[in-house]
Image (cartoon, rainbow, N blue to C red; front, side, top):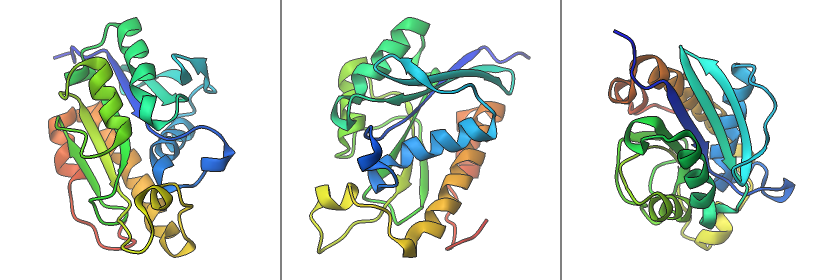
Length: 199
């Protein structure tokens, strides 16, 4: 039976500009860049207040979007893309974000839910008018010593780089499972507790 969901939008959250490269808050951008390279997607180009690429993957039209609005206005970019392609967020949208409440590099796929204090998710929920969309959260841990804003905008330290590289690889594989098998089945692949550097 053919998959009725012919178009799927994957949004990676982050902040634009070299200043924010390789920071914890930009893990969504990094995962999207990894997917684009893996799938040999066309170059990202400016569209929908972000950087956008479109390709075919697993029999679907896959849309990749990195909002360039800064994190707390991400919803404006996502809303434009959803309206343009007439998408149903509950079945045709995946948002990738960092998460302070998960251990470093731990992944969690959820099909709906609140913003959990994340300004990017909060903006998307406000702009598209629903919490019913899938989100892939990547744990960045938290610090008792560094203020939250400084922590999330800090560069990923060398000691954690290997763990994050593993998480990015695992996230990319999980997203491929989503496209192939659907969101619900892919949760079994993604929501597995993994030890450090476990592949």
